[in-house]
Amino acid sequence: MKASKIAYKPIGMALGAVSGMIAGAAFKQAWKMIGHDDDAPDATDEHRTWQEVLVAAALQGAVFAVVKAAVDRSGAATIRRLTGTWPG
Image (cartoon, rainbow, N blue to C red):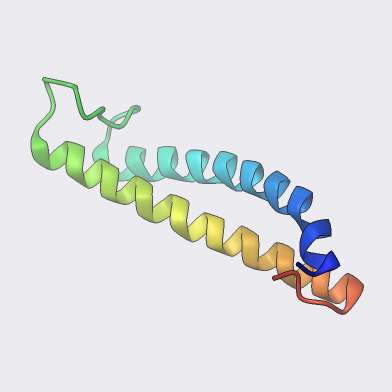
């Protein structure tokens, strides 16, 4: 394993935590706009329809994936600018 990849591990973990917080906030705002409700439905919420639950799950997954990819890619690009080596 390359030294740059090992050195990037803690940075990548920190970026992962940050991306989770960003994605959570983004999903909450998106759900408010789409669902007109403060909280997204849980899968076990008996007062919500299948459609609501599945749309919320799909939206949450998409938001988390996009935010994680954007944050990871930005972090790797920043490391390359600073060190000249791509950390992957």
